[in-house]
Length: 297
Image 1: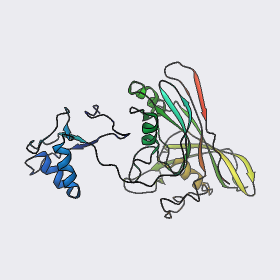
Image 2: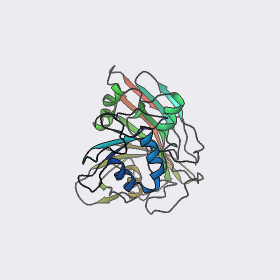
Image 3: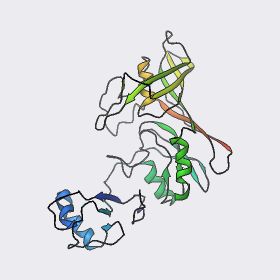
Image 4: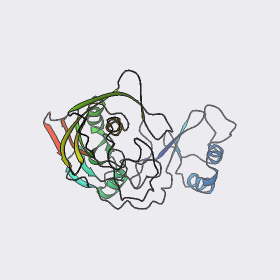
């Protein structure tokens, strides 16, 4: 994907819009007004201020012709969000990477209702790092070690560690203890996640997901488990624990979904990205980062 002609502003990337292949709009602005009628006044203001540009960075005007398949870039007004009352702790920072200890309930990156209240936007703003980019992601309700690249030139090298499964990730989880389940156990299944459907699911077929699960400790009927994913499918660890009959405490998706208010922080998912280990793509040195967080019983 080509670089956006607008820089990151206040921690946020510009929005990119692709104009449809065909349409009856005479100008780019009439298309925008038709697509976002509730934002009509603000869109006109942005166009008049020269804040809506094409792929070359040229500001459009009220008379700029509609071009099928062209791209427009603009800054959307960030939503007003209630602050997630937990902080991001920094574990390590150098010229290439920033490694943090993400809390539960904070999104890794802007998505849906969580834009400003994401680790990425917070850190870009607080540390003045406009090129900060995640090398991988954690679910909003999962805490633990999360790696970002600091500069554009380093992105590909570190992202490829995860794309090519050269980064070793270890998680910790709390769930009930069942003496009939023998550990360690390796769970393999085929996981699919359909667009627009909240839950992922396991189906018959060639496995595409693998997790090694071991029991670390048992206290008052609750087991502490070490989870080592060999693949990275959506909700993989949560599904695999549930498939053993040991759903992770605080999981409102598996085995059954139940709704939880966005500002209800009383029962976090007891899942923690405990450590991340890899050979640094620049130096070749083995690097390991560990979370300082603990899971509430």
